Image (cartoon, rainbow, N blue to C red; front, side):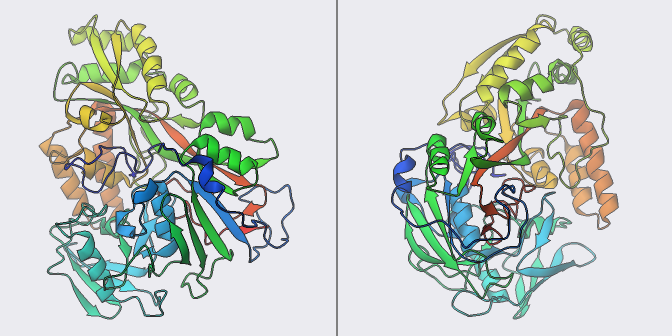
Length: 540
């Protein structure tokens, strides 16, 4: 988150380069609150549009140009920067994608879609890829070139820096890669990589001009907006880039504001101080959905919700115990209680609805009798286990309590242990046996490579199987997509049967907008191309 990662991992831990505790799909907290929003008194109204007043925020009407949209995100305080290679929080990424571009980005199914790249072509061995750039220009009018791409990637992978995308670009041999001409890059890879386009779409892999620049004073990118002003921890004001390669934005201006408290964001939206509130909680959404004052938009399948069982130690080194825990879970009750119904049930696999997700496997249901029988077979009757959790993420402590009560019906005693928000991800990576876990959106193959291979540095379930590693290498060496999907399906069948992730649900990511906002994409999981994408938004 992250994933976002996206993704929920430790703060400042060398095993997680470029990731921070308050990163993707992590609820940021702070004291900026509504005070930051009061700094602006700009008129948010745009020109009258064709859309009717009762239309939904994402619905139609003919797009109209003009106006300023104000959007509130949780932020990072005075240390915020516009350097896109340092983007970690949601607010950072919203600013980065407004000012800069990547070669590719993730579509709604988390497959790579062309952006600054128009096409990519591998050699027969899948270890050299030729990437062709579109005709695009930076804000200073200079063209985006192959040299700029190589400069950007080499900057990201500087061993002295901790840029977010460094680990994602690891498959590339940047010393051997070269510019074939102004708009063609030949990437030489360290090993066959069938999913190389996912590398191009990696979180934080933005393209910048091939020279040093002062990002916080005069950032030069190729994105849809140009910087007007930036006050770290408070706001960034951006103006439309009329020369944008993907078409000039409809908005005249975009203001990205910081409001760390969820209550501040919803109150500012209700009070007309902003038109877009990022990251609302389910109770807020329920209170205002259909009420006529604001629009609530749910981005489905944005966050995997799970418990992680460590498969290398008792009691979860016995696959019968893991299967029993799969069967103990009442997933519908967990979604209803821990997510307030704002999500859907999981099936012990990551990536529901994403490319390569195996939807053919039967949905697992609660079966307490079978769970008891498996525990008896494993000699684990009367099992006692500690479940580590923390308020580090919404719903964690609630889910732990619900599962504790479900397990008791199978004769399992679960003791819930609540850990520190500051050290939770570091604490549970290697210690303990059973913990609350979540992940933001990323491709299925990225989840496998980051979390399920023997050498993966964020392998929370300690899933260490050489034959599984070999299947991943086989998939990455398979040129035919259907054949590659079959290998991923084989891997998922094994995880479904005996893996360490009890994936009980997928949470919605919730946004709020003013009634006159149009063009907000409702089918884009958080961290994908169309999430927080303001160049296609307009004011009716």
